Length: 150
Image (cartoon, rainbow, N blue to C red; front, side, top):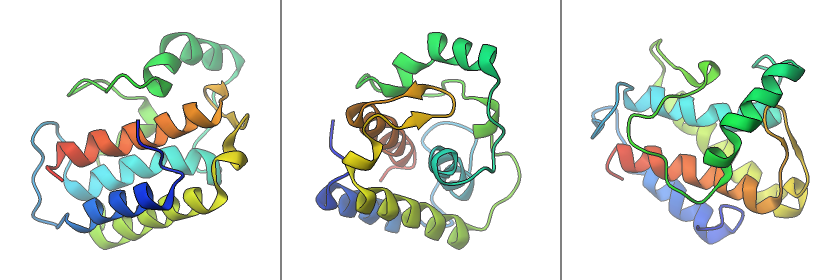
């Protein structure tokens, strides 16, 4: 799996995002391109903001047992797979705003670096290694950028 914490991979991902336009259509799924970028930002919002409610202890246990391995492993996500409720984006989003927000999150994450994330607590998955954080971020971005053909 590529390392999202390196500048080279971050730059590559940003170049892929820059190839998107308001007219870019998905190859699968229901989201439009602005919704997809908002959806991808949710992973970062869980780290950098309090925008999304934290799961209680029981729900955190359930999420860890059912979803953690799929989220942090190197195994690609299947097309049209289900997502957690906070990741569902159904309202219309501003393309340029969502694009800038996502790119800013990606750059901030790369600048903080993998050592910042090593052992950092995920509010729904528990403590993750730097490799698990990398897989969480990169795999999700790659999945959705591929969804939109970039």
